[in-house]
Length: 91
Image 1 (tube, helix red, strand yellow):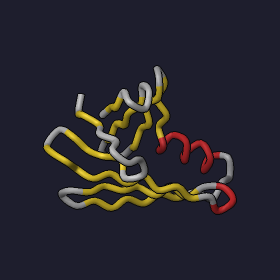
Image 2 (image 1 turned 120 degrees about the vertical axis):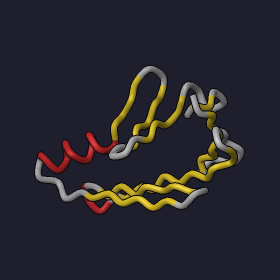
Image 3 (image 1 turned 180 degrees about the horizontal axis):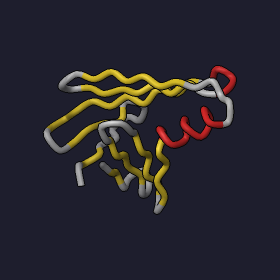
Image 4 (image 1 turned 30 degrees about the vertical axis):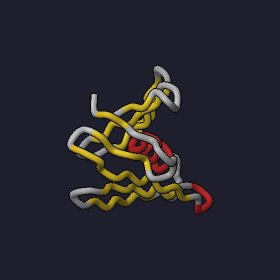
């Protein structure tokens, strides 16, 4: 999913990963947490979804936590709950 109003930014969801796409780079959240874990970090992730919503919480070094939350608008559109009026269309 992407939204050009925020620059070239988007998201990709897989069965076991949440990927942030910005410009021409992709950042696998699973990969990032695995790297921290491999280096002795205390990390975890959890997700929650319904038919209309999806959220993922990432907990990493020093107790830092970030949650990404999305709401489905239609079969091919979601909104990122953190950014007002953000609409991402399935590509």
